[in-house]
Length: 392
View 1 (cartoon, one colour):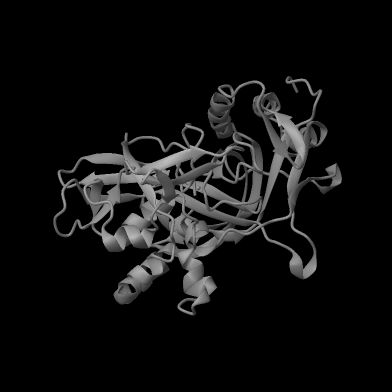
View 2 (cartoon, helix red, strand yellow):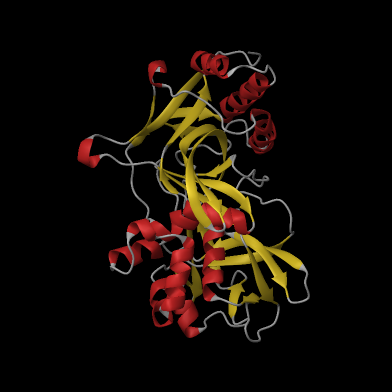
């Protein structure tokens, strides 16, 4: 989803990164109880407990004095902890859907994006991301010609306050903007700092989008790669570029369709991929559970990436959208997607409250389904009311 620090898969998503550029949204607002949605979960609710455990593991490491801003209100980290703990207690009581909704109405304040009215209204975009698997080699030889890089020694990161960082390169005692994707790849500026070589430049790009993945090496072993740092350059959507330049229709843009367009138009590949200045550097990681920006394991279907300036890390949320049903690589139907989730990842292309990226899991099927997600929807954030006892 920093996502590029998705996982931090970034955080950031197959379509959210490839299709849409960052958009500014007005605000999050607290709802009246009469405006609360009907909270119905399409998964097994008991499975949510372990997801919330991961959020609690993170939140309990945060200094007690830490506060997050939500809809203009300062929220202590303890209130986020209590929000998750109270919900876990609710899960243990085997409530009916109606009873659960009554408890939420009694005990939680629910927030939702305020998108404005009429022609100026903004939509909430729900997308998906996953952990990919690609073939690779530790040495450059055909067809393994396209590298992932480690963090360059010349890259420097400066704290500039308010949790912001200035990323650049050291030259002559000064820190200059780090090279763009186009400059790095066209002039081979990072020669000697390759981590691993892949078969396809679009596979490299996908890993930059996803932030982590698994590489199957030529000897059959598998190693994980994980986001380490970015070049600090602004993300620019290649999917949006394809639409804006008339190469594709918005409705047709998916991961597979972009890949196929590059196969069909190889002479345009660099022009399209170099449209995005952002570039990601990696380090090796263990193959195992996918880890989000909180340093905790992500749960397929339950973990989401979002802008944590708006959605506090570890926060309890509810999403309402739709998801694809696929057979033989094709979408055959769409079903309602309604479930409780937790904010456990982030990403540099996830800006504002109007974006949410659902972690779909690992492997080919997860990739196909995540690649289809670019749906309107709603995200609701649940915050336990002050003074509510933890035992429901």
